[in-house]
Length: 238
Image (cartoon, rainbow, N blue to C red; front, side, top):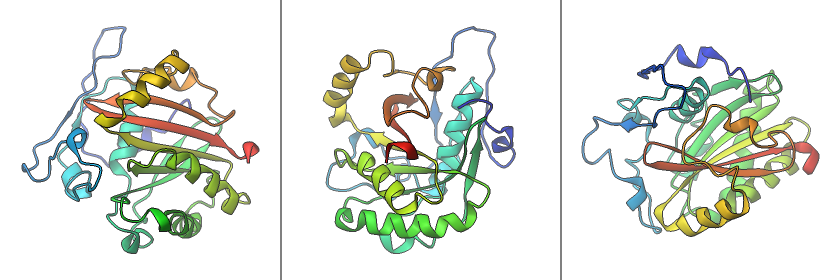
């Protein structure tokens, strides 16, 4: 995904620090929110995700210090995406969309959290919301989805569900899911399986290191101490 739109930078409160170094400096996330709003994601239990984590209000004071433009855009995409806390409010809170453009795909994005109690309704609610989202995607051929969950394999299932329901509209799908401390074993397994794809930092060319619009691909990156898993897929595989 090259040449991401600089327009992502226009309506944000991000702080960027440049450097003359050839290597990408470590990504950091700092927050001045209250102790309640800045709960540590890595210590989140498997039974519940705090609603104070990654809400729109708590992200307002986050300052990203990421040098590379690609990492910058992706972190902004995550930050500015609409977050909701329950399936009931999910469909009604996808208006604050952000868009990322490349040479080959334009993605309209939204996100949601706290789906631990809604597993059985996830695909139904997600499909419903994406159908509503397509009203805003007339000039776009892909969708960005942010997950904050711990269901093994759920993002892959979500990708399949998206393309089964919306083949007529979407060409590409990018899904980002947070990784928790308990998933270290999975990360280690992927590092062994994909040594060139599993990254400790979001490198400038990391999206070029994978077959971006080929088969479904998975890799890890981190912003500060928070790790994410990235899933990419195209319609031809479904």
